[in-house]
Amino acid sequence: ETGVTQTPRHLVMGMTNKKSLKCEQHLGHNAMYWYKQSAKKPLELMFVYSLEERVENNSVPSRFSPECPNSSHLFLHLHTLQPEDSALYLCASSQDSPLATNTGELFFGEGSRLTVL
Amino acid sequence: QQPVQSPQAVILREGEDAVINCSSSKALYSVHWYRQKHGEAPVFLMILLKGGEQKGHEKISASFNEKKQQSSLYLTASQLSYSGTYFCGTEGTNDYKLSFGAGTTVTVRA
Image (tube, rainbow over all chains, first blue to last red; front, side, top):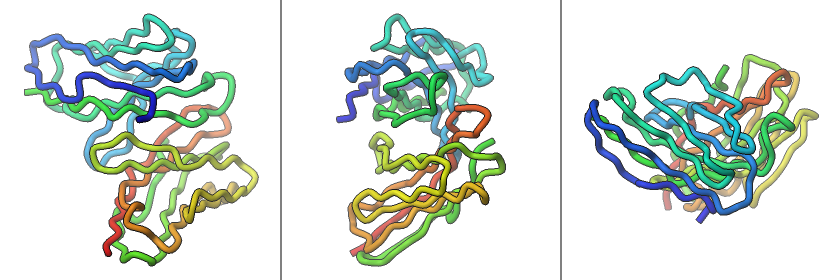
């Protein structure tokens, strides 16, 4: 139990569907992150939120849309995805904003396994 | 720019030692190490800041050679619980954006 909870754990969707991934952190942290994990590839940073403001958008296609309504919740809205978007999507949080100092310890959720048919 | 890890995979018997290397093409401010067991979240092991600091976590230690832009993770007297995929993450001196390597899969057998 890392204090970061992701739902759903597994999701199968067609290319025309719209779905959302949810992340909740119970640690009182100020920064939240979305990473994409594909087999045999490095973890790819997608988005960073610091105090509910997006501070990093790592050239992610617009079919991925993040939302951070408060410092404890982070969503990733998905629409018209492609099969190559199938991956494990990891949410993480850290105590401090990565803008103010180096990235501290990241607390990861167990991820949402996405399959796009 | 993502760091390069080597080897990609290593198989050990309990009690054996292993070294995992992490190299970057940019000047580094920090190196982070994480371990991910199958089906679980990555778990933080340690952060090393520039200055050549060496740190330890149980029998797992790491070094950071700032000049060579490299870090090494040392698994000493490996235990079955050490099995998993180890990731290094690096931050440059000019940008505090954490980039991860592709990972090294460690399998420890009895």
